[in-house]
Length: 328
Image 1 (tube, one colour):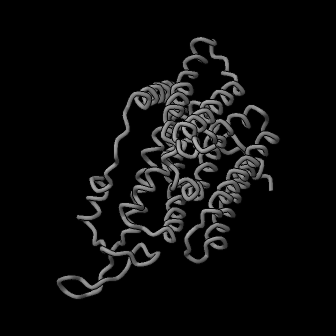
Image 2 (tube, helix red, strand yellow):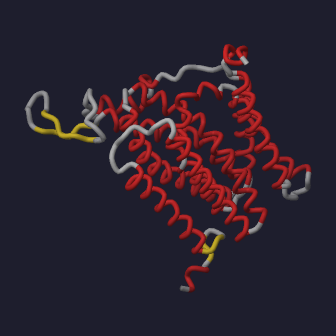
Image 3 (cartoon, one colour):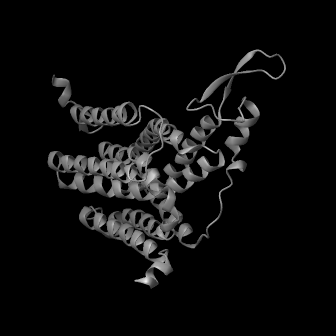
């Protein structure tokens, strides 16, 4: 059993096995127990399940704090909160995708589950690529930092715009290069249908498959922000990967909890913009102002948490129902 204490990417193998076991257990429990049969997730169920996933992620962070120390623990929580806040934007886009393809709520959860499995793999590949670049060329961190600052400033001044799923190049490509049915076939991603010309049975994708693909493409776009953000916080691969994945695992439940009220978070994007600017700026502050000293992790977590919490609170206050407020 000596291999369990061997360092892999800077962390003992047994840490990785504990994390992998937790991810597999949660996914199996979710798909095999909670949603063995396709059914619509209720309004009361989704917040509870979302709170359950957040609770597991926080307990996991507490375990990291105890086993690896306060510094890795704080960095885990900072990365987790940033990724969780960025996920609210994902909820809005996923809602648009499901609406465009007319996917009933009872099939949405399973599509999201398999989408999340693919996202974990893709996010892992992006993190590995980022880690290799940072390991070989430290100056890449300055590129990530500049990108975060630029993205944050752009978010602060960019206006809102509608996303047209129909014009997505991936949707167009799949529609012209694959057979796609016009109607859903339950939870199936592919079905056998008669060919229009020969009558022979051929495999065709369903709208549920298209929705799955576009959800993963959307996550790749969002990962362009979140992956540089976590590397600006830490280059510890265990913290980078676990904080991202633990936030992503709860995305399914978060979607059903927030999809109907995502418009209430209209002003959160400005708080996220400030978070990105702050995370990017502290790389330069640490290296060029503090002489290479570490930026205080507690301060980083505090500023990040305060901005996100402030953005959520301000959004809920600004978008409150004026009639209900007046009746009090």
